[in-house]
Every structure is written in structure tokens, then in C-alpha cells.
Length: 261
Image 1 (cartoon, rainbow, N blue to C red):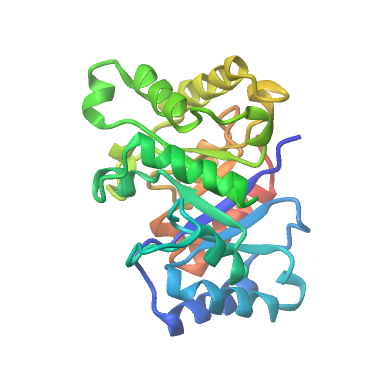
Image 2 (image 1 turned 120 degrees about the vertical axis):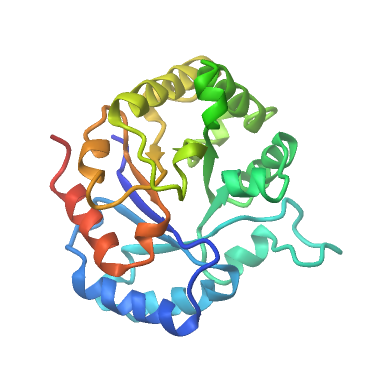
């Protein structure tokens, strides 16, 4: 059974005070899911340790909410000013890391080779990677979205033994729906999730594509989450803007608690 997950990517938002306030408010609003849904927050690097500490003080939530980093450098140490290693991430209590987010690819120039290096490093350090894949609007309009997605997956997992990648989750995030307010419909999302599972079948993942946790991301909110969660094969969400408010993040969790319909 694939475990559902709700993950919040704060991107470059919040300061220390607002981040700690979020944790307290979320704990008051969120339904008790009894560990049946993985809940992960991805704050900016300087806020990881304070958020970890705040969660650990949260009584029943201390083992139910986890923390991750939004990116990592593939090297464990070295002269890489401004970069953060997976070892450093783990040392402050984070267990997850996002790899290959479209903003890293398109704004900061992360190549497929760089994404592969980061994914290999995360797996070696036993971090739980969330690999992001997704197409541009131009690629979709050209009818090349399936080919493009397969090329991203092939490149990301190059020279990685699928048997050692069982902790990797895939986040399908169409670039044209990230932070734009434009929603991908269930009809558009479903075939892409199915394609990723077929790819995993052919790539030799233990248990095939059916064993792979696949999240959807891209302007997810409390209004559209029910329809998207109902899509066959969607195991949860990587949420951007809607994860910045405790009320909306808790509302999406509540929707997921009710299960698929």
C-alpha cells in the first residue's frame, strides 16, 4: 500500500516568527490522521532547525510532521559558497529533500545531469527525495508532454539501481500550473500519472509502478484538491502557496483524511 502524503513547499517565504506561528496554528487546526498520512514541511534552509524543534515540542505531532529541504548540493562538503549539503540537512533533523523542482531547473539552471547527481546523493544519504517532473505549456501544446516527461525520468534515474530508490517519491508538477493560479484538471493529470507508473514498470522498480508514490503539485488549493485527489494514482500533494496558511494546509489534510471517493 502506498502511503498518502501532504507536503508543503514554502519556497522563499516566511521569517522565523511567522514560521513558528504557522506550526502552532497548524497543530490547532489539523485533523488527527494518526500517522496514516505523511505530513512534510519544506521551509527555507535557515528555518529547518527551528521548525524541527517546534514540531518536537508539539506533543502528539512530534512524530507525525516531518521536515525537508527544498534543494541540496550533491557533494557532502567542499568549496561551494552558498550551497547546502545533504549531510548538513540531515544533521539538523530534516529527512526529506526536493530534487529537480522546476524553479531550480528553469530559474537556477539545474540540468538533468545536476538533478541526477542530487538524486543519487540523496539516496546514498538515506534522505527521502521528492523528484519533481513536469512539462511547459509549449511542450503540452506541441503534444510532446509524454515524451518530455519520460526524458526527465530517464535522465533523473540514470545509473541508479531502482532497488535502491524505493524511498523516492515523484511529484508531477506541470510547469504551466505552478504558482500561476491556472489549474490542471483531473482529465489532464490522470494520463500523466498513469504514464509515470508505466515508466516505472519498464524501469524495473521493485513492485513496478504500482509501488511508486506519486504526488501532484501545481496551484493546489482547498477548492480543487478534492477533484485532484480523486484521480486514480494520485497519492497526495506537493503544495506551494496554499501551504503558507495553516488554515488552507489543514483543510487539504482534512480532505485527504476522508479518503478517496
